[in-house]
Amino acid sequence: MRSVVGEVALPVAAILAALGVFGIFVAFAGVDPVEVWFLLFRGAFGDWFSWQNTLQRAAPLMLTALCVAIPARAGLVIIGGEGALVLGGLAAAALPYAVTLPDSIAGSFAVCIAGAMAGGLWIMAAGWLRQFRGINETISSLLLAYVAIGLFKHWVEGALRDPSSLNKPSTLPLTEGIRIGGMFGSDVHWGLALGVLACIGLGLWLRLTASGFSIRVVGGNPRTAQLVGLPASKLILLACGLGGACAGLAGAVEVAAVHTSANASLIASYGYAGILVAFIARHNPVAIIPVAILFGGFGAAGSLLQRRVGLPDASVLVLQGIAFVFILASEALRDVDWKALAGKFKRVESGPTPVQAAMGDKLS
Image (cartoon, rainbow, N blue to C red; front, side):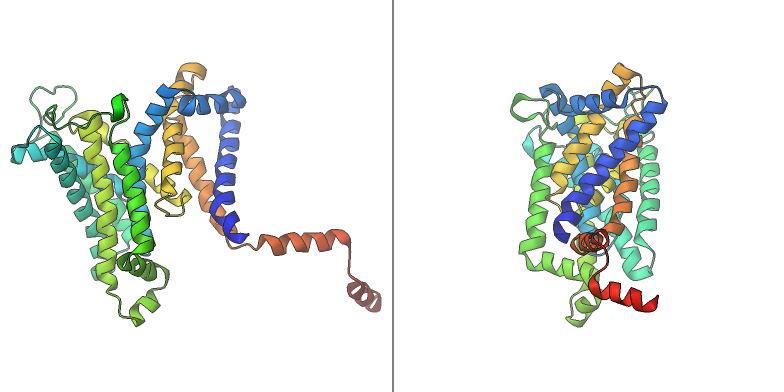
């Protein structure tokens, strides 16, 4: 009972509560909340075009959520996925400057590997600072994200800038053969498949392998991990590297499948939205898939809200923020024994027991 409520009912209730509060906000703006809720659903899942837009946005959310979820299983709170994403995109765009890539799937694979390596090393830096210098990983990963964005802008607007990009500095576009196309003739690129495979693969790795189990032990009970001699520092760096690699891969996919080059459009807060997705999914890699699709749908519906009811496109960010607050608040309810609580209310409604009544008469 407690497990079902904690894992499913509380996140669903938190999202519904966020939608309710969001409806109150839009009502103050003079907009019908029911119409807003309907447009949110329609813009996200109303037709095939909406589904394609939703799934495109869900792909990077899956990968950036893994950047939070995998280190979390090792006991770390990493929130710097945005930095790993932008550096992954920069590495993917910069690789053709250094080496000549084949215009084939091998070239696409190479830029994805470059992005994953850049993101993995960046998040590993936060893990190293925590393990060997005692610096809080939440603060260091967040600050490293700002450093990464600064480095990104420095290179895109400087040495790697395409001379033909005037008002919007960009790197040279990737060649047609290196770009990642859509799946089965749709607009949904293959990055979605990579995100789903990463979630399922890492979920199975955590459950079925010795190294995955060791990481869960380190995150769940560090004292036990120390007593049995697990190499905690190596495992933490491994978790950070895998999580960062996923975020870096998200940046590489965004460059190779969406933007075709590295530019300011890559800084779209997918890394920060991934924090919310990971927390709602309880850091379960497989559960990240449906949650990312849901929040990808919220993002896809923003433009429809702007066209139909005049709300700003960024109003969905307000919804995401409210949902994050409710998810954090719901954490306090996870350890409540709902069965015992329900029994207590039943006893109160049915009145005092004979023993309680006798004690009350005696005291009076």
